Structure formats: structure tokens, C-alpha cells
Image (cartoon, rainbow, N blue to C red):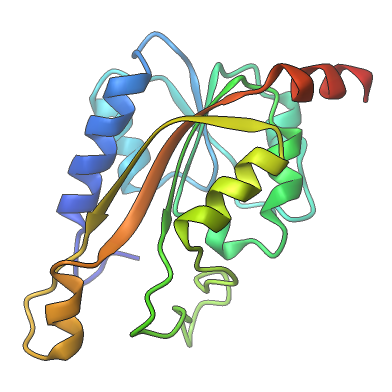
Length: 183
């Protein structure tokens, strides 16, 4: 996935945000297969398990059977057709999630070779906030950052000051916890 580039700025910002809200003694379930960032979390003292590559639109087993205190989802929800469903199934009370933001000057990302590496959604911040709220989460903190590229042109210039990534720390609302117990 990162054959040509490594998102150092994104990983640095994501780790700082995670460290602000999650202590290393809290076990984490990271949505998605093991990846360079899950390795970074482990190198920084976190106990991390990953989902196994199952289709999280259809198979909720990993989150339903996990006893992790925190679920992380870094650039996962944009790949799902219905992220609401997996968000409702998470048993943990804490969530740290990031998404790439929709950019008005660039089409949604679509890999021509990997059907799993395509964005069904590219959210605006308010849309992601609403999805989390509707699925039983209350956002406690949020941050955005840019993704400048070392190229010439209008789009690279716009990327230098237009936020590309959005990250949130959210906690399960009491109402949604009660609803989960009933199910």
C-alpha cells in the first residue's frame, strides 16, 4: 500500500492524537488488517489486535467478540458502504477514528487495481460527526490537518492549506449503551 510514499505527517499527527486520549494500558482493536500504523502503535507501547480482512459491512464478529477498551479506525470508514452498522456494533466505550476529507477540487479516490482500496465515501466533517452521533457516539475532541505534496500545480497548492484528514475521539453515549444491552 505504501510502496512509493509513507504518510509520515499523518502518522505523526495520528499518534499524537491517540496518545492524548488513550493510555498504553488500554487494549485496542484496530479496524482493518495489520498495517504500518498498527505497528507504530505497538512500538509505542499499545496492545493492539486487528480485524482479519473480513468485509466490515457484512461481518461484525471481530467487534462483537472483542474485549478491547478502545476501537481505532484510521482511514477505514470511507471504504465501507454502510459504516453506521459497524459503528453500532462496537462494544467498546471509546473510539478514535480518522477519515480523509472530501476535497472539492479532487475526485474520490479509486484504485484501479485493488477493489478494497476505493473510497465509497469521502466525508465533510459535519457528515462524519452526524454519522457518529446517529450511531451512538459523542465526539469529545477533534482535529484536522493538511496533506501537502511536493509537486507543482493548482491542486498541490490547494492541498498545502486545505485540511485533508479529520480525526475524532468519541465516547459511547449512555442511551446507545442501554440500546446495545437490550439487543
